[in-house]
Length: 433
Ligand SMILES: *[C@@H]1O[C@H](CO)[C@@H](O)[C@H](O)[C@H]1NC(C)=O
Ligand SMILES: *[C@@H]1O[C@H](CO)[C@@H](O)[C@H](O)[C@H]1NC(C)=O
Ligand SMILES: *[C@@H]1O[C@H](CO)[C@@H](O)[C@H](O)[C@H]1NC(C)=O
Ligand SMILES: *[C@@H]1O[C@H](CO)[C@@H](O)[C@H](O)[C@H]1NC(C)=O
Ligand SMILES: *[C@@H]1O[C@H](CO)[C@@H](O)[C@H](O)[C@H]1NC(C)=O
Image 1: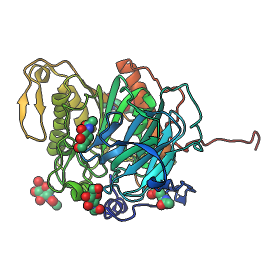
Image 2: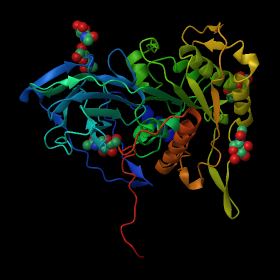
Image 3: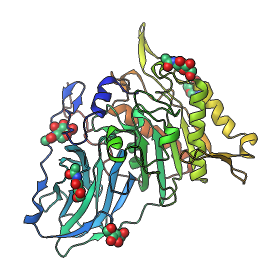
Image 4: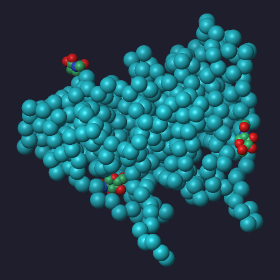
C-alpha cells in the first residue's frame, strides 16, 4: 500500500536533501544522530576500493555499487579501531543509515553524497571489545526503501586491514511491497518484518526485494510503472532514483553471480487488490504465479512461502473486526495447492521476466510452495493509521514467520542475543503504580 504522502516522499529529487522527521505515534522522535563526516585528507588510511573482495554486499547492489530495495547493506571484518567509508555522488544526500560493530546496537548517521564518514573510531562504544565475534565485524544497512548509497571506498587505519567474512550457510529472500519493506515503521527497512525475519533467524544471509506501491501484476499501480513479476528480475527497484540512475536500461539481476536463496517468502497483492489500481483477479494470479515460477526457474531448490494478505481492522460494536475482503484469500490458497499438484509438478513451468520466455523445465519437481496463514497474528492496534504494521506489528509478523520456518524447515534460531529491532525497548521501571 502507498499513501499520497508516501508518493510525495518517493518522488523527491535525487540530489536534494532527503531527510524527513522520524515520527512515533504522530510525535517527533528525538534523534541525535552524530555528524560523522570527516576530511579524508587529514587522516592516514589504508583504502580499499568498492570492488575489493573483502567487502560483502547484502541485498541488491548494481555494477556502480549503488544500493537498491529495502535494507541493503555491506559487511566486512576489520582490524584496528577505525572504519571510514567514502560515499559516491549517486548516494541520496542525507540518507539515514544504520551501522554497527558485531551484534551490538545499531547506530545511525545521515550520509552526505560524495563525503567520507568516520563510522568506527576508538571513541565508538564497543570498538575496544576483542570478542567473542572474531574477526571484528562491521555492518551497514540503508534504512529507507527508496533511497540508497553508493560505496566509493572503505578505509581502515594505516597498517590495519579488511577481512573477507564467509557468507552464512543459509539464505532467505523476502519479495514484497510496502508491507515487507517497512513503510511507516520508525526505522523503515530496519524496522520491517522482512529485515526482522532475516536478522532474527540469525546466521542467515537475507535480501528484502520489496518496494512500496508495487503490484504482483506487471502493470502501473500508484504510479509505480512495473510489477514484481517484471521488476524482481532486475537489480534496481521502482524508485524515482532508479529512473534517474538507470533510465530505460535497468541492469538485470545476475542470478548466476549470486547464490540462490534457500527460502523465499512472498507477501504481495495488497496493491493489486486495491480498486484504485484496477488489477483483475486473473492478472493478479498470473503475476503471482510468474513470481513463483521465476523463483523456481532461477533457484530450482528454493522453498517458497506465500503469505496470505491482510488489511486493517474496524470497530464493530464493542470489538474490532478485520476489514473484508482481505484480498484473494481463497485464490491464493488454491494457487498454492495447484503448485503442489501432480499436474503442475509433472510439468513445471518456469518464467524469466527479462527474456519473457515461459518454458517447461525438463525434470519433475518436488513440492516447494507453502502457504503461511496470517490470520490471527495482527490485531487492530498492530496496524497504524496508514494501514501498515506498527513497529510491534512488524515484530509479530517476523516472529511468527521465524517459528513457521523453524518448524517447517527445521531451521534453528541462531540469533541468541544480538540487537535486531532498534529502540523497541519499552518497559516499566517502577514496581508499583
Ligand atoms: C537524518 O535523517 C533522519 C531521517 O530522514 C532525519 O529525521 C534527521 O533529521 C536527519 N538528520 C540530519 C542532521 O539531517
Ligand atoms: C576493481 O576495479 C578496478 C578498476 O576497474 C580493477 O582494475 C580491479 O581489477 C577490480 N578489482 C577487483 C577485485 O575486481
Ligand atoms: C560523480 O562522480 C563521478 C566520478 O567520481 C564524476 O565523473 C561525475 O561527474 C560525478 N557526477 C556528479 C553529478 O557530480
Ligand atoms: C480497468 O481494466 C479494464 C480491463 O483491462 C479496462 O477495460 C478498464 O478500462 C480499466 N478501467 C480503468 C479505470 O482504468
Ligand atoms: C487461516 O486461519 C484462519 C484462522 O485460524 C482460518 O479460519 C482459515 O481457515 C485459515 N485459512 C486457511 C487457508 O487455512
